[in-house]
Image 1 (cartoon, rainbow, N blue to C red):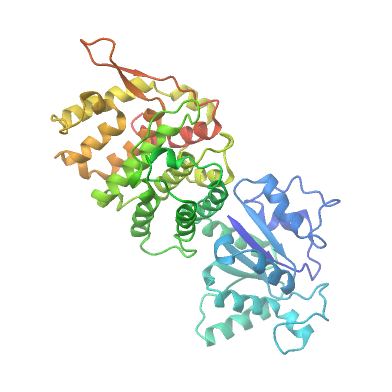
Image 2: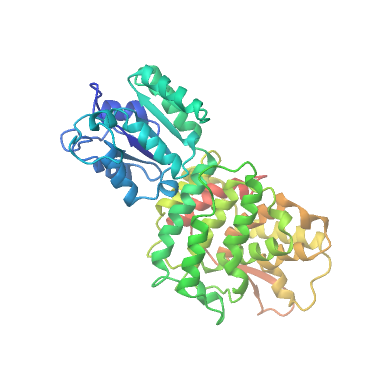
Length: 450
């Protein structure tokens, strides 16, 4: 979660660890904040740098007055980069009263009410009022402003006093806005920005397309669209939005049919079948994704970026940490994962038997050994007349299970012509951190009965 905090530290407010913990203790640990070397007053960028080094998923940006805000707005896109905003009403502490201001008004009076001008500017930019709150030591000024807002039909302006009770209410307000939707959106936005610079030199996607290569401009536009797809304000009908997001996310995989194992160059290449099957299913039976959740979108987004690019390493990226947070309540810890991990062959054989029971006839034109590749087996259910083809929970589980079974790459041993023997590659999650983290976070969704 990214928060913009606009505060001038007037009225004796501590510009150090005490205030940081009172406001943001549940987002970022401030035990290592060094007041001798870090300064909120003289170098506000210290705060965001500290957050980036001490939290993989949360950041607080500080502006001390209107001019800081104006500069921040030039550098950042507020509706994409910031998830919530906290504004102090008076911003006249240690400010340059000789500098130009945007209105024809007494400069000192302007800075005493600068928080209101910033609020008005945010509304003009389209920033949702429910994601903005005020902090003030002057209760009367807040009530007066709320009355003025009501007079022009701006309701529900939220404010808190600078007191122990007020700080507690602020922390609760932040917590209520730190939703699954907020984290999904933040991970997607940051992930798209991570991906676009990789298009030029780290693209692997065209290895799957057999000549139908995507251009640099096509993929840049693709990530621009995804970055802007989820609005800052959570829609009332988010289920429909999620289904359309999956359709857009998987769109590029229409032409990707040359998906083969590549253990030397890209050991996770077979995960591309997750996106290829998703594209097929959402195109021919979009009702499968009409009741999906933030976790499945996060999983598909992580897989999508990983198989489209050859990253420099397998370490977990910041945007992946944000998205994996959506699974925190159900993730296995590291030791528990090693104890519960089931042999891939057992899972595979269970699914094969289930599919053969449900789907007696093999699709025409398909070689018999192809029907024992997991992606083909899962797709055969969708192509069959089985009632299971409309089972939304089943197909969500199949997508998660493809993560395990495509990495281990089941194949048919043709040496013995008298039997159809399924064998597996050995695949070790432990030496590939992003795969290990994803595995332990999606384990219960992959194997809900274990």
